[in-house]
Length: 345
Image (tube, rainbow, N blue to C red):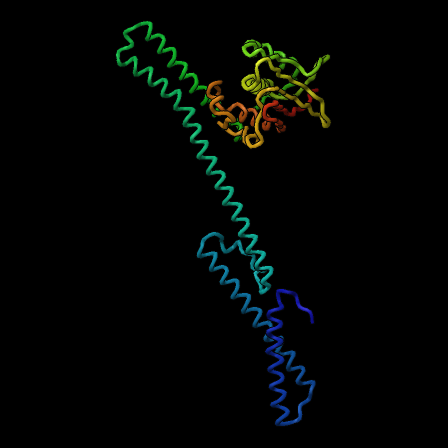
């Protein structure tokens, strides 16, 4: 007789008990009287069945109750979560269940640790971003209160600088508010058909003066004939392209180039690429560049300005359109950011 693994322990034990008992009874009966072999065999089968059922039930109940007690003691799993039919005398199956449970809990703990580290880093970053303009505003106001306001020229200059610090605070708060809305789906997108090439050219015109400071050329990757229509929120896509191009200027090299290309893809999609030949991004920084306040070069970023929220906003806006954003970069050679949009009709 071949048994399933989960019954093997009970079966082998019951077989041993039934066989030894039958042999003992057989010897006893043989010593006192002739015994019919058939009745001895029937007795063996009956005893085996009774022993098997009792042992299987008792051991299974014993194992389940002990495991349940362990879970209750450590308070990491509710009793209802334990699948009762799967807790049997099959120790291999039981071991797999425990290992799977332990692995899941290990992954949960690792995820919580990552989130906790991210939370700490985020709080440190936002604290740094907010306290700099706050201390600036406070210092100018305290200087004025200490008597500097009597000098009209100094008063006007200090108030102007304090106002600049307040504007930066407002800018950071607005960016954070936008990210919060994007994350919870609270930002309403006003989709429309528009010419993406014309929008890119308008951004080039707006950023021409900024690009001229480093003599960076803002160009298309090729000459486009006609128009390329996309269906998206024009204002938000303008924000995406502006942030990407401004970043390319910020980290672009002197006399460099920022190139924008628009490529038609299958499945009614368009790919927009923003490429530069600037500093580039190292491999270890690439996975984190879309995080809020994350800076590849903290000192450089402070010098150049910015809230550290630009790429995070870019990612959220693109994803709010149910599209994808990609980045490829090589340190010292340059970077390419690209994202998809739906074709217009």
